Length: 136
Image 1: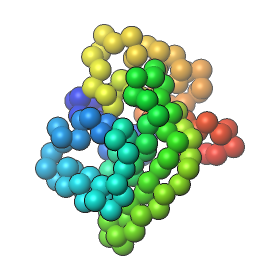
Image 2: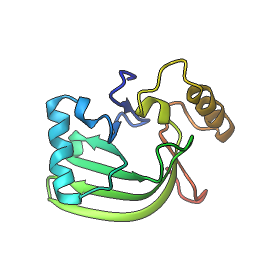
Image 3: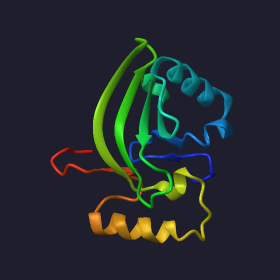
Image 4: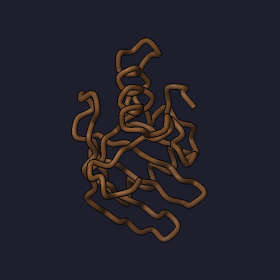
């Protein structure tokens, strides 16, 4: 899905940039708002919504201006259990163009495609671990 609001990842989970959450349908905004109340994420983040698991994950972004932003913190909110798990895990965001709603003519798109090819990861993968021993 590339509608400017978000994307589906390799496991068909929905991801969106914090800047685009307001464009989401009401049901998804509700998931994010409930989770944000429990987790209090940073101002710049990528949110992954997993309605079937009643879970929302926030990935803090170091700088959205970077070509390949790094996430260094992951907050997992289990809405069913109303629990929050906060962990440090460094990853590189490799689908920034889709998440940020960049145009199809953006220079970011070919750069991401080349990076995914060099890293031998699929087109639907959103993150790649900075630590090669950690599997995605």
